[in-house]
View 1: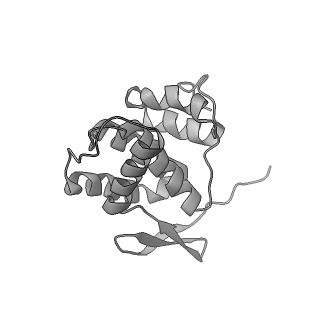
View 2 (view 1 turned 90 degrees about the horizontal axis):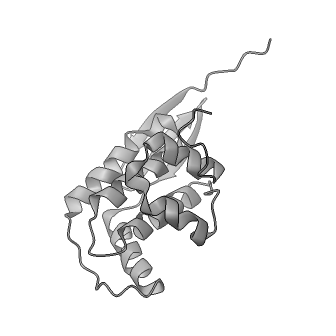
Amino acid sequence: MARRSQLALSTRSCDRRSCVLAVDGVSFMVWYPSVDDIICLNVLVLDMTGDKHPYKLLGSHEGIQAIIEEAKQQEGRGLTYQAAVLLKRLSGHHPFSGGNHRTAYVVAKSFLLRNGKRLRVRDWDRAYPFIKNVENRTIEEIQRWIEHGQEEDLRREP
């Protein structure tokens, strides 16, 4: 019977934008969005989707930074888990006057792309119903959706 090897994961150093991680002795950099990145993505989302809400930051910079820090603290759980944290927490926090769910989706997608991963769902029309209901999902359900791209049977353990 083959044994699965355990990956040795450790955080080497972190700053506001990235962390150096080591997996089995191989180091790599994890990129994180800044508060300004998230604000810019909200403005972009509102513009691209023709949203009638004018841009307005309702939450605080500190509140957004706390969400980024929460994602950083989950490094041992993997990039898709961290993206799920960003998606759920930004959606629920409602830091903007409009486009919060769309912005959270774009932030999570950007986080994955900048770190060499992809969201399985690439069709916005398929993603939107799930994202609008993300506050009623667990982080694990969102993670499975990110990894597998299907909404069916999310509550069931893989």
